[in-house]
Amino acid sequence: MSTPGKLWGVGLGPGDPELVTVKAANVIGAADVIAFHSARHGRSISRRIAAPYLRPGQLEEHLVYPVTTETTDHPGGYQGAIDEFYEQAAERLAEHLAAGRSVALLAAGDPLFYSSYMHMHRRLADRFEAEIIPGITSVSAASAALGTPLVEGEQVLTVLPGTMPVDELTRRLRSTDAAAIMKLGRTYPGVRQALTDSGRLAGAYYVERASTTEQRVLHAGAVDDAEVPYFAITLVPGPEPTTPLPRLEEETVQRDRDAEGVGEVVVVGLGPGAHEWTTDEVRAALAEATDLVGYTTYLNRVPERPGQRRHPSDNRVESERAAMALDLAKRGARVAVVSSGDPGVFAMAAAVLEESADPQWRAVPVRVLPGLTAANAVASRVGAPLGHDYAMISLSDRLKPWEVVAQRLSAVAAADMAIAIYNPASSQRTWQVGAMRDLLLEHRKPDTPVVIGRDVGGPTESVRVVPLGDLDPAEVDMRTLLIVGASTTTALETGTGTRVFTSRRYGRTRDAAAGDA
Image 1 (cartoon, rainbow, N blue to C red):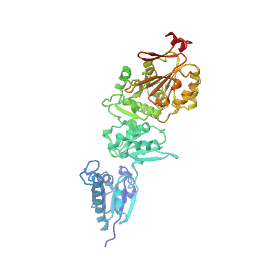
Image 2: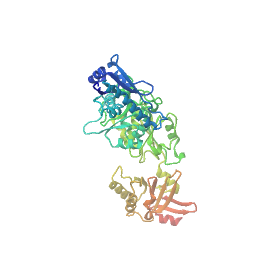
Image 3: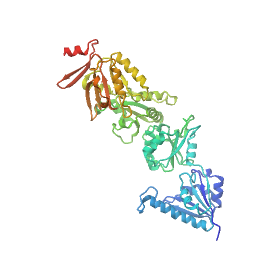
Image 4: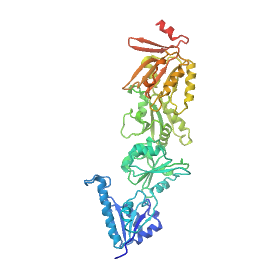
């Protein structure tokens, strides 16, 4: 019997034949059999890369996948069809090896990095001698194409398949320093969503067919979903790029963007809920925008327009959202950053302007268009509780410590002003409303009117007036705004409901006003 042949797993690198290692080229030239995979169209990327190193007369084994992304009538479904193919392909190679012929099984990139070679290795390496020649991975090639460091120091790089569920991909992107997302193609809309939801889109880049003559490098947000091939990769570098990325500037961004010059960012407020509370000025800005950026719930209030790109994200990534909007505008987009209410009241205007102070965004124009804020909308439902001096305070301690919130509540209460309370509670913040009530009762009478406005302007609107001493934190959630009256705030019961006003004649107590009525 002849001595069995040797199986070589040959890494070819990412696509450029000149990136094939010397050892890989020598093995390809010496092998008796050259094996390679392809889809049913028959065009093998691996064979094309290896072509300069083949010699005349070599046997070739063309292993054609029965399915790739299409459906199949195989009784075992997609996985059954693939498993059967791998078994049959392994036996074809085993016949050559048993006959004493050496087999070089070609693998784009590295044979053990998301490669078809590993399926043959599992089925053959226990019967025949096998040796693996490593190759340059697509991650390394894409990083080189981008021309900026991918990780440094103690940073962690996570390699992710784009086929993961969006929620899981989002979770992993949030928890890593740097990432490479592979297996794109039809998965790209979900990948873009995960990048947006994790707040990583602004720092993400897309590299297509790295190292080949068809290479393209774009910002991840500028990619047309319909044109993404499987052989593309998204990179999220750990270090902030400190050098220009000239290839990004040479690419043509999506067709519906301005091709020349810097675009602009317009921060708009939709108002608190009702469609009629959105101004004509804001509607015009939304219609003119090529890109909409915002918290998912707020973007869902804006009608979709053909050709307009939407970049929804989680409510907790304001800085990342602002940076993404500025980066899109820097590359020519007309971006509308969408807020509820007024964008300058506990909303996105401050985040965008703060981020725009970074020198890289200095050339990007930023405009702010006002909107009806929730405090005025809630006040209007009961009359004029904000008719005199008042303060606006956010009860959220996510961006400032509770000690600061408490200090400001006490100061405003001592100053005897009405208070509009934004962000009073959420699913994670449930105790602050009770703490606020107790602080205010140190300065206000228990019968001070408190307006509880929930989803004002929306389909589940409700407005109630209760005494401060009876305020129940269980009635308050993130969709609620509170207005706490001053000593001059009066609540009147009428035939059409409770009316509340804060007198502009200072020094006139609500008890006196009620007596006059």
